[in-house]
Structures are given as C-alpha cells and as structure tokens.
Length: 297
Image (cartoon, rainbow, N blue to C red):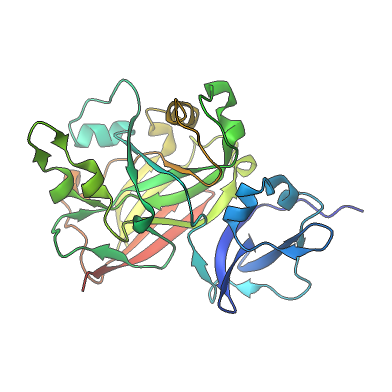
C-alpha cells in the first residue's frame, strides 16, 4: 500500500538548534524522511539540488511518527537559503507601470539582488541609516527546480519547482539617483542588507496550475497598500523563465521574483517604512509573509 500524496508546502525551519526541511500540513510542520534508510532531509535546498522533489511527493516520503511542530512556535527560515541567483523583474504589472508613468519594456527588464538581502518570515526588514525612502513591493516568486539554459517557453514550467512570496524592499533614494551617463542605480537601490524577505514556504508547481489567477496584496500595520491579481502581469512566468535563461544556466534553488503591482509608497504617496512597522505580503494559495521593520543600529 502506497502512502498518500501530500499537498506540498515545503519549509526550512529550525528545530533543536538545526535547520531542516519540513512539510507543512495544517497548522503544523513535520520533518521529512526519504530513502530506504528514512534519512532526514536537512534543507529544501538539498531537495531541489538532489532532484528529490518527486520523491518527497511520492510514496518514498514519510513524516515523523511523532507529533509535528506547531507553526506558531516554529521558526521558519527562507524556503531556499542558498540560491545561486536572485533574479528580479522590473515594471511587470500594468498597474505599477501606470503609477510610475513608465512604458513597459519590450522584453523583461531584469536586475538582481544578492544573498545579503535574503531574509525569511519574521526576520526584520532593515531600514538602512543611509536611506529615508524605504519602500515595499509584494511579488510572486518562482523557484527553479531543474537546471536549464536557453529554455523555450514551451518547456519553461518543467523547470519550475514551485512558488513563494517575496517583498522587493527598495531604497528609492538610491535606486532613483541617476549616475552620470549610466542611468538609475538599481543594484544599490535594491540590494542592501535585509531587504528581500522570502517565504513563508514553497508551494509546489502542481498545486498552482495557473500562477496568473492569484490575488496578491500587501499591508503595512494592517492597512492595505497593494491589492491586485497576478493576471495583471505583463510578462508571464513562462516568458520570464525563458528570457532569464538566455545564455544563463538556471540552477535548482534560483529564484525569479516576478514584479509588483501598483500601490507602492513611491507611486501612491504613502509614508515609507520606518522602525516599528509590520509588513504582511500575501498571495492566494501560497500564504502570508510577515516581517517587522527595524532601523539599522
């Protein structure tokens, strides 16, 4: 008799002082064991790197025999912790392009963040001492599960492990500051420490057959700032995976953050983030990514 297939939400979480991969079911997270020896999997990154996603979904995966850990007491980490690449997409919602008064590009506009920016659920977004215009951007994020280069649009979804929620926190006073002859400084304006919350977990691709039908929203201190639907995306997930892979090998665990809808502080006139704020980024069928805001000390 085979084990039932799970509705898979994969999370990295801390238990007994160590990070390990967990399977979220209801309001609990369970350790994952695979293989004939039922070995514990230490991270979601290893599941992706080892091509074990189908194994986890299938009959070779098993939960611990004991009770799971309540999510309320579990310390979740970023669902991928060691991405080789963090690829970001600019101006990819019609609503955001209108509020920014920017004509959408003919091809996806890509920039990057680095691991220093990556944080998980509950970890603080850092307002740097050098910035007074720290903004939010809720985004649907694609997690790559299969290595590929020059991927066609028809094959793009086969390279997707699943989806999670991100917040592209942006220092507008750096991003919008033009360098002489070089344009805007996207990398510095987007890539400071503690400015890329990701989580709360990875929902596998088969659980979301169409990622362009999802409500997407963000609230600051309980006040809604962004509210849209991923149907408003200009370039869709298959466009983005294919374009990002042109001349560049995508690796398991790489992330592509697919752009934000309208409602950012820069475009709406809302106050920028400050010490004591709480930001909640939410996407239907995935969950809510909640992070406090702290000023750099």
